[in-house]
Picture 1 (cartoon, one colour):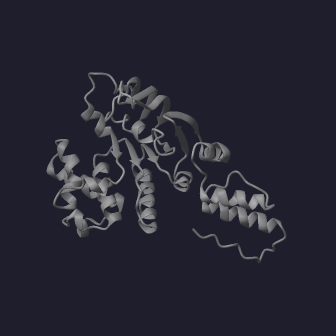
Picture 2 (spheres, rainbow, N blue to C red):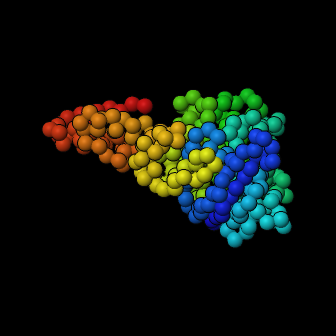
Picture 3 (tube, rainbow, N blue to C red):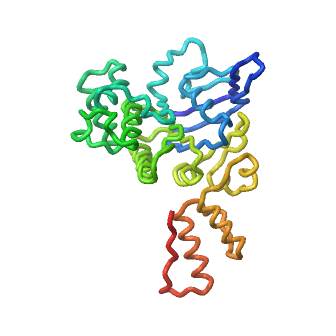
Length: 297
Protein backbone atom coordinates (compact mmCIF):
# COMPACT_ATOMS: atom_id res chain seq x y z
CA UNK A 1 0.00 0.00 0.00
CA UNK A 2 1.33 3.45 -0.87
CA UNK A 3 0.25 7.03 -1.45
CA UNK A 4 2.04 9.36 -3.82
CA UNK A 5 1.14 13.02 -4.24
CA UNK A 6 2.80 14.93 -7.06
CA UNK A 7 2.76 18.74 -7.27
CA UNK A 8 -0.73 19.18 -5.80
CA UNK A 9 -2.23 22.64 -6.03
CA UNK A 10 -5.73 23.58 -4.87
CA UNK A 11 -7.31 27.01 -5.26
CA UNK A 12 -10.47 28.17 -3.52
CA UNK A 13 -12.64 30.86 -5.19
CA UNK A 14 -10.53 30.87 -8.33
CA UNK A 15 -10.83 34.05 -10.33
CA UNK A 16 -12.48 35.98 -7.52
CA UNK A 17 -11.02 38.83 -5.50
CA UNK A 18 -10.57 36.52 -2.48
CA UNK A 19 -8.93 33.68 -4.41
CA UNK A 20 -6.84 31.52 -2.07
CA UNK A 21 -4.17 28.97 -2.94
CA UNK A 22 -4.81 26.54 -0.08
CA UNK A 23 -2.38 23.86 -1.29
CA UNK A 24 0.63 24.98 -3.29
CA UNK A 25 2.72 22.48 -5.27
CA UNK A 26 2.80 19.79 -2.55
CA UNK A 27 4.53 16.45 -3.16
CA UNK A 28 5.12 13.53 -0.77
CA UNK A 29 4.89 9.77 -0.54
CA UNK A 30 3.65 7.45 2.21
CA UNK A 31 4.42 3.76 2.43
CA UNK A 32 2.63 0.85 4.08
CA UNK A 33 3.12 0.78 7.85
CA UNK A 34 3.92 4.48 8.25
CA UNK A 35 2.28 6.63 10.91
CA UNK A 36 2.43 10.19 9.59
CA UNK A 37 1.62 13.39 11.45
CA UNK A 38 0.65 16.61 9.68
CA UNK A 39 1.07 19.90 11.52
CA UNK A 40 0.65 23.55 10.65
CA UNK A 41 -1.08 26.68 11.89
CA UNK A 42 -4.78 27.24 11.20
CA UNK A 43 -5.20 27.92 7.50
CA UNK A 44 -1.92 26.28 6.50
CA UNK A 45 -3.65 23.79 4.19
CA UNK A 46 -3.67 20.63 6.32
CA UNK A 47 -7.35 19.78 6.00
CA UNK A 48 -7.48 20.75 2.34
CA UNK A 49 -4.53 18.46 1.64
CA UNK A 50 -5.97 15.38 3.30
CA UNK A 51 -9.33 15.82 1.57
CA UNK A 52 -7.54 15.21 -1.71
CA UNK A 53 -6.31 11.80 -0.58
CA UNK A 54 -9.69 10.11 -0.98
CA UNK A 55 -11.01 12.34 -3.74
CA UNK A 56 -13.34 14.60 -1.77
CA UNK A 57 -11.48 17.50 -3.36
CA UNK A 58 -9.89 17.56 -6.80
CA UNK A 59 -6.65 19.49 -7.28
CA UNK A 60 -6.29 22.41 -9.64
CA UNK A 61 -3.17 20.64 -10.83
CA UNK A 62 -1.06 17.67 -9.80
CA UNK A 63 -1.69 13.96 -9.34
CA UNK A 64 -2.38 11.47 -6.56
CA UNK A 65 -1.69 7.74 -6.73
CA UNK A 66 -3.08 5.10 -4.39
CA UNK A 67 -0.76 2.22 -5.17
CA UNK A 68 -0.67 2.37 -8.98
CA UNK A 69 -4.13 3.95 -9.39
CA UNK A 70 -4.15 7.62 -10.32
CA UNK A 71 -7.21 8.83 -8.44
CA UNK A 72 -7.03 12.28 -10.04
CA UNK A 73 -7.75 10.85 -13.49
CA UNK A 74 -11.27 11.19 -14.89
CA UNK A 75 -12.15 7.50 -15.24
CA UNK A 76 -11.48 6.36 -11.68
CA UNK A 77 -14.46 5.14 -9.62
CA UNK A 78 -14.07 7.11 -6.42
CA UNK A 79 -16.34 4.74 -4.49
CA UNK A 80 -13.62 2.12 -4.84
CA UNK A 81 -10.95 4.54 -3.62
CA UNK A 82 -13.01 5.58 -0.58
CA UNK A 83 -13.23 1.95 0.47
CA UNK A 84 -9.44 1.98 0.72
CA UNK A 85 -8.89 5.47 2.14
CA UNK A 86 -10.97 6.28 5.21
CA UNK A 87 -11.22 9.89 6.35
CA UNK A 88 -12.43 10.86 9.84
CA UNK A 89 -13.37 14.53 9.89
CA UNK A 90 -12.96 16.83 12.87
CA UNK A 91 -15.91 16.38 15.27
CA UNK A 92 -17.12 13.23 13.45
CA UNK A 93 -19.80 12.68 16.10
CA UNK A 94 -21.83 15.42 14.41
CA UNK A 95 -22.29 13.00 11.51
CA UNK A 96 -23.97 10.28 13.58
CA UNK A 97 -27.53 9.88 12.38
CA UNK A 98 -28.91 6.35 12.84
CA UNK A 99 -31.19 5.13 15.63
CA UNK A 100 -28.64 2.76 17.16
CA UNK A 101 -24.86 2.56 17.40
CA UNK A 102 -24.85 -0.72 15.49
CA UNK A 103 -26.88 0.68 12.59
CA UNK A 104 -24.67 3.76 12.37
CA UNK A 105 -21.44 1.75 12.28
CA UNK A 106 -23.00 -0.70 9.81
CA UNK A 107 -24.03 2.01 7.33
CA UNK A 108 -20.76 2.02 5.36
CA UNK A 109 -20.24 -1.77 5.17
CA UNK A 110 -23.88 -2.26 4.16
CA UNK A 111 -23.34 0.08 1.21
CA UNK A 112 -20.50 -2.17 0.07
CA UNK A 113 -23.11 -4.83 -0.74
CA UNK A 114 -21.94 -7.23 1.97
CA UNK A 115 -24.18 -9.88 3.53
CA UNK A 116 -25.94 -9.03 6.78
CA UNK A 117 -23.67 -11.44 8.66
CA UNK A 118 -20.53 -9.82 7.24
CA UNK A 119 -21.85 -6.35 8.05
CA UNK A 120 -22.46 -7.29 11.69
CA UNK A 121 -19.08 -9.02 11.89
CA UNK A 122 -17.34 -5.87 10.67
CA UNK A 123 -19.31 -3.67 13.07
CA UNK A 124 -18.43 -5.93 16.00
CA UNK A 125 -14.76 -5.88 15.05
CA UNK A 126 -14.75 -2.08 14.71
CA UNK A 127 -16.47 -1.64 18.07
CA UNK A 128 -13.89 -3.92 19.67
CA UNK A 129 -11.05 -1.92 18.11
CA UNK A 130 -12.38 1.40 19.42
CA UNK A 131 -13.20 0.01 22.86
CA UNK A 132 -17.01 -0.02 22.74
CA UNK A 133 -18.48 -3.24 24.18
CA UNK A 134 -20.89 -4.70 21.64
CA UNK A 135 -23.43 -6.04 24.14
CA UNK A 136 -23.49 -2.77 26.05
CA UNK A 137 -23.66 -0.25 23.22
CA UNK A 138 -24.89 -1.90 20.00
CA UNK A 139 -28.58 -1.16 20.52
CA UNK A 140 -28.17 2.15 22.32
CA UNK A 141 -28.86 5.44 20.62
CA UNK A 142 -25.57 7.12 19.65
CA UNK A 143 -27.01 10.36 21.01
CA UNK A 144 -27.10 8.90 24.53
CA UNK A 145 -23.34 8.37 24.57
CA UNK A 146 -20.73 10.61 26.15
CA UNK A 147 -18.68 12.88 23.92
CA UNK A 148 -15.73 10.50 23.84
CA UNK A 149 -17.97 7.50 23.18
CA UNK A 150 -19.70 9.31 20.32
CA UNK A 151 -16.29 10.05 18.82
CA UNK A 152 -15.36 6.36 19.13
CA UNK A 153 -18.62 5.27 17.48
CA UNK A 154 -18.08 7.68 14.58
CA UNK A 155 -14.52 6.46 14.06
CA UNK A 156 -15.74 2.85 14.23
CA UNK A 157 -18.00 3.58 11.27
CA UNK A 158 -14.92 4.38 9.17
CA UNK A 159 -12.87 1.48 10.55
CA UNK A 160 -15.68 -0.94 9.69
CA UNK A 161 -14.98 -0.19 6.01
CA UNK A 162 -11.51 -1.72 6.63
CA UNK A 163 -9.57 0.99 4.80
CA UNK A 164 -5.91 0.55 3.92
CA UNK A 165 -5.35 4.20 4.84
CA UNK A 166 -6.90 5.83 7.92
CA UNK A 167 -6.78 9.64 8.03
CA UNK A 168 -7.84 11.43 11.22
CA UNK A 169 -8.36 15.20 11.28
CA UNK A 170 -7.93 16.51 14.86
CA UNK A 171 -9.48 13.36 16.43
CA UNK A 172 -9.06 14.64 20.01
CA UNK A 173 -10.37 18.18 19.45
CA UNK A 174 -12.69 19.39 22.20
CA UNK A 175 -12.34 16.31 24.42
CA UNK A 176 -11.54 16.31 28.13
CA UNK A 177 -8.13 14.88 29.14
CA UNK A 178 -9.45 11.39 29.89
CA UNK A 179 -11.35 11.10 26.60
CA UNK A 180 -8.34 12.61 24.81
CA UNK A 181 -6.06 9.87 26.12
CA UNK A 182 -8.66 7.19 25.40
CA UNK A 183 -8.86 8.25 21.75
CA UNK A 184 -5.07 8.19 21.41
CA UNK A 185 -4.95 4.69 22.90
CA UNK A 186 -7.69 3.63 20.52
CA UNK A 187 -5.72 4.95 17.53
CA UNK A 188 -2.64 3.02 18.73
CA UNK A 189 -4.71 -0.14 19.00
CA UNK A 190 -6.17 0.28 15.52
CA UNK A 191 -2.71 0.86 14.04
CA UNK A 192 -1.25 -2.19 15.76
CA UNK A 193 -4.05 -4.52 14.74
CA UNK A 194 -5.03 -3.22 11.31
CA UNK A 195 -1.68 -1.94 10.03
CA UNK A 196 -1.77 0.07 6.81
CA UNK A 197 -1.04 3.81 6.74
CA UNK A 198 -2.32 6.17 9.43
CA UNK A 199 -2.28 9.95 8.96
CA UNK A 200 -2.91 12.14 12.01
CA UNK A 201 -3.60 15.87 11.66
CA UNK A 202 -3.25 17.69 14.97
CA UNK A 203 -2.42 21.00 16.63
CA UNK A 204 -1.18 19.05 19.66
CA UNK A 205 2.58 18.75 19.27
CA UNK A 206 2.80 16.32 22.19
CA UNK A 207 0.41 13.91 20.47
CA UNK A 208 2.33 14.16 17.19
CA UNK A 209 5.66 13.52 18.93
CA UNK A 210 4.32 10.55 20.88
CA UNK A 211 2.25 8.89 18.15
CA UNK A 212 3.92 9.36 14.79
CA UNK A 213 7.15 8.27 13.14
CA UNK A 214 7.20 10.99 10.48
CA UNK A 215 5.97 14.59 10.41
CA UNK A 216 4.89 16.80 7.49
CA UNK A 217 4.87 20.53 8.23
CA UNK A 218 2.53 22.80 6.26
CA UNK A 219 2.79 26.58 6.03
CA UNK A 220 0.94 28.86 3.64
CA UNK A 221 -0.24 25.90 1.58
CA UNK A 222 3.29 24.58 1.10
CA UNK A 223 4.97 21.50 2.53
CA UNK A 224 7.95 23.13 4.23
CA UNK A 225 9.42 20.24 6.25
CA UNK A 226 9.24 16.44 6.10
CA UNK A 227 11.14 14.32 8.61
CA UNK A 228 11.25 12.29 11.80
CA UNK A 229 9.71 13.95 14.90
CA UNK A 230 13.13 14.43 16.53
CA UNK A 231 14.38 16.21 13.42
CA UNK A 232 11.30 18.42 13.03
CA UNK A 233 11.03 19.44 16.69
CA UNK A 234 14.76 20.11 17.04
CA UNK A 235 14.29 23.41 15.19
CA UNK A 236 12.18 25.30 17.72
CA UNK A 237 12.95 28.71 16.22
CA UNK A 238 11.72 27.65 12.79
CA UNK A 239 8.51 26.27 14.24
CA UNK A 240 7.92 29.44 16.25
CA UNK A 241 8.39 31.43 13.06
CA UNK A 242 5.44 29.70 11.42
CA UNK A 243 3.16 29.85 14.46
CA UNK A 244 3.90 26.43 15.94
CA UNK A 245 5.67 25.14 19.02
CA UNK A 246 7.42 22.04 20.27
CA UNK A 247 6.00 19.26 22.49
CA UNK A 248 5.65 20.24 26.17
CA UNK A 249 8.35 17.78 27.23
CA UNK A 250 10.82 19.24 24.72
CA UNK A 251 9.96 22.75 25.87
CA UNK A 252 10.59 21.78 29.50
CA UNK A 253 13.94 20.20 28.56
CA UNK A 254 14.89 23.42 26.78
CA UNK A 255 13.96 25.48 29.85
CA UNK A 256 16.11 23.23 32.02
CA UNK A 257 18.94 23.53 29.52
CA UNK A 258 18.68 27.32 29.70
CA UNK A 259 19.08 26.96 33.46
CA UNK A 260 22.33 25.09 33.06
CA UNK A 261 21.20 21.46 32.73
CA UNK A 262 22.71 19.77 29.68
CA UNK A 263 20.23 19.75 26.78
CA UNK A 264 19.04 16.71 24.81
CA UNK A 265 17.33 17.21 21.44
CA UNK A 266 15.80 13.70 21.61
CA UNK A 267 13.43 14.67 24.46
CA UNK A 268 9.96 14.68 22.88
CA UNK A 269 7.62 12.83 25.25
CA UNK A 270 7.02 12.71 29.00
CA UNK A 271 8.78 9.35 29.10
CA UNK A 272 11.78 10.91 27.38
CA UNK A 273 11.73 13.79 29.87
CA UNK A 274 11.61 11.44 32.87
CA UNK A 275 14.61 9.50 31.55
CA UNK A 276 16.41 12.75 30.72
CA UNK A 277 15.96 14.10 34.25
CA UNK A 278 16.92 10.80 35.87
CA UNK A 279 20.12 10.61 33.82
CA UNK A 280 21.11 14.24 34.20
CA UNK A 281 20.33 14.57 37.90
CA UNK A 282 21.86 11.21 38.63
CA UNK A 283 24.96 12.23 36.72
CA UNK A 284 25.04 15.48 38.68
CA UNK A 285 25.83 13.58 41.87
CA UNK A 286 22.65 11.74 42.81
CA UNK A 287 23.13 8.34 44.39
CA UNK A 288 21.53 5.05 43.47
CA UNK A 289 18.91 5.50 46.14
CA UNK A 290 17.83 8.97 45.01
CA UNK A 291 14.23 9.20 43.88
CA UNK A 292 13.53 10.00 40.23
CA UNK A 293 11.67 13.33 40.03
CA UNK A 294 8.00 12.85 39.36
CA UNK A 295 6.82 14.35 36.05
CA UNK A 296 3.14 15.21 35.79
CA UNK A 297 1.03 16.28 32.86
